Image 1 (spheres, rainbow, N blue to C red):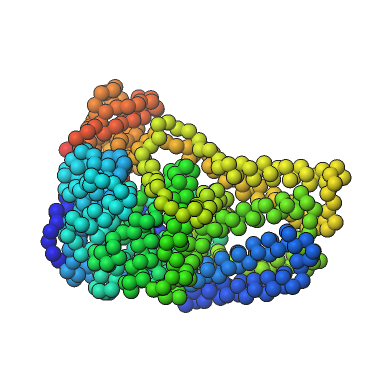
Image 2: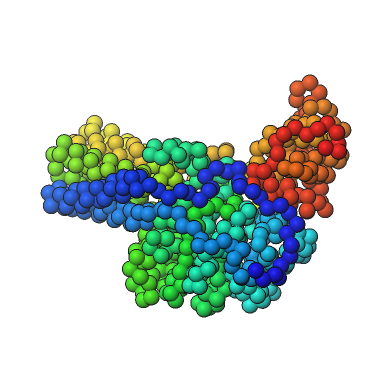
Length: 639
């Protein structure tokens, strides 16, 4: 290994306390046979069903029956692409150990406006990684305090005076100034754990390997994107919290390994410098520079691999506004990539790579399918048209069998990472954002790169429900009233085929439930914007506050909430001692709040004072990895 690095000062986080991040064991043949068999059966039945629908059930009201049939075709095609993407999820592993690979490594941390509470653990954990490497903080905000923080933690600092092309331009500037064979890239809010380099560098034994991507996972499991996993099909996933991005990062991306189509996701990845330079650096023509660059890399014959082990943890969108902003940016970038690279028709890609890219890029249009399924039953109720010309029992049996098999196939293919109730709920939540993004396909041109906010807000406020959801809820209520009035003979509309009208109303009620649930989640106090700039994680271990044993209730990079068993000095400064494995971190704090509890006790809110970056760095990387020791401390201050 070449040596051109700063020695790490901190202990790297060990295996995280967040479950489900380990490299999965290969699927058994029996399990895969069940999954793939169910998918094939569902697809075959769907073809038969759609053929029957086209030949025998469209009738004369073609203005409504054909759109409904096309929506069903779209769903079947989506199932086909879903099956293709998730056919094989076997975990890949590097051929050799990292210490046998003689490469010069640089860890890059691009940053623009992230606060110290976000940057500090990222830089500290990156510096601590093995093997020998350089850590570079790429500051596009030209902030003196970031340069000082980087120097304090043992990282290099690089800033440019011109800031064109956002993150892509930032990394390309570093590419001109940093000597390295492999660039490991971490977003400013992603904290690497032990193994980020050692578990992935071995892949570069293959001289044609350009990118190693690892999953994105998140340590703020109370985010807008997280919930309890209620998977029906995979009990072994129920101890892993649901993350809206979990299916993509733990299922779809590793599935792309089979087709040679895994792509760079911007962070938690290693990129060979030679490959990056060969394609002219990071693509800056779209706001999703990662997948855009990967397409160009694939066209040059380079390989990519997805290592399905969580080796870094970041910050998920805390509220609906952050979530929607991300989806609009990602979807807009996908439209730009389709315009500029033509991955479905352009030269240089294999057939399987084209299909894999199609599954990812065309998936953004699923929001139109969801919108269609909301509007069609309302159109039936308002007009009295009959979209299905078939006996009720015949249709319900055919549709019921097809729909059930499709849902079973989707549930099995998702491997438990997307419980169907939550997955469907998020389809409604992101519907407006995705539709907005896909509409940008009609308007070519450069789009501004909008950074997802990582800092807290100025106050605590509930989020606004997107106008499209509000409009659909109002339309559904209007259609329900119209239906009641029509049945009572108060409108000029007549339902000549009653079962289709009642079926449309039942469908509307289901849609209403999803729309209202989506609006309720967006408006929930649980996901209101928060002024805190750092994530507080629940603890519960024993600590010392001014030499007295106390209980640590929650802790963050910026401060802690402690339940003092006695009555610490009221106000002013305090000393907090926290056990980290075999050492104690001592932190100076200033009291920000106090609430009496119990017999002489108090809940004390503490803020860490400045000038303790190294101690806070040690705390933060252990905190995020779940490595804080919860054993009681000895009463003695020397413990």
